[in-house]
Image (cartoon, rainbow, N blue to C red; front, top):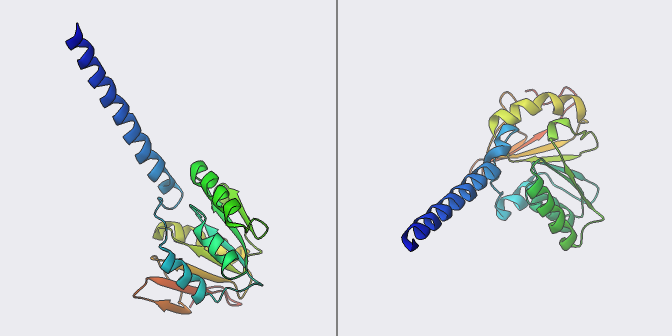
Length: 186
């Protein structure tokens, strides 16, 4: 009888482990459906992105797919900007909300839950993103119609096809675009 119980216990542990693993994979990658899985931007790149966009106290920074909130926190804390993060994953949203509270910057930062394709971002002066190429391409129309001339977009890793970069750091894969009167087209 003890042998059967042991075999049952082992199977239960394996089943629990499989469910936890599958749950983790789904949680980590389900956001691919709207643009990118969770892969935090290294802090060294965060600062380079914000420096390249010349973020300052007068700016309103939007981070699309804000993950753990590191970019919005850095924009507020180090550069004095007001910042908005938009995150579709409920766990990352709650985590970033807690990180904002702990940062001491809650007056300057707002984290929004939801799909960034459906959020209005017209007041942005700077938009940061680390999404996949396909997500960037889907955002082009939104940027062209909602953003004002002079708005800066900083993309980490992926470029926008057909748009000329204002400045790029190829070794860091950071690309800055500035909206002109005619949009972002070359």
